[in-house]
Length: 92
Image (tube, rainbow, N blue to C red; front, side, top):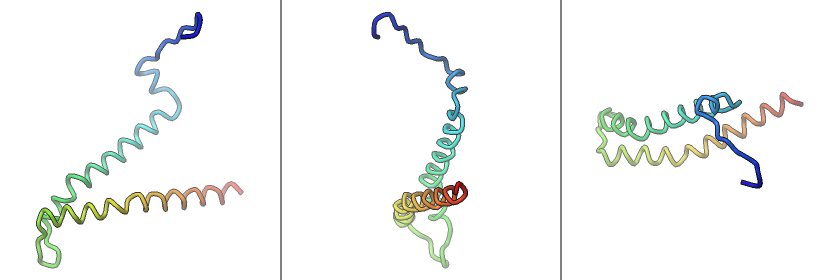
């Protein structure tokens, strides 16, 4: 602290009232929910579902999910660029 300045923290509920905190928290929650769903449920689903009458091994199902995960950032970046372009077009 500098000199006689006193910084007091805020409580939990006051933090929720800060603009943008609730929307950020909800976005993060659903992003994590989707990520963990794909991480834990999707390999099981792929392993348990016949694909052209063939069952994949757990290793093959995990590899399919891992390959899909590598392309998620590319898709998200493309989506962000598209949305920013649409927003920019509306602002002009």
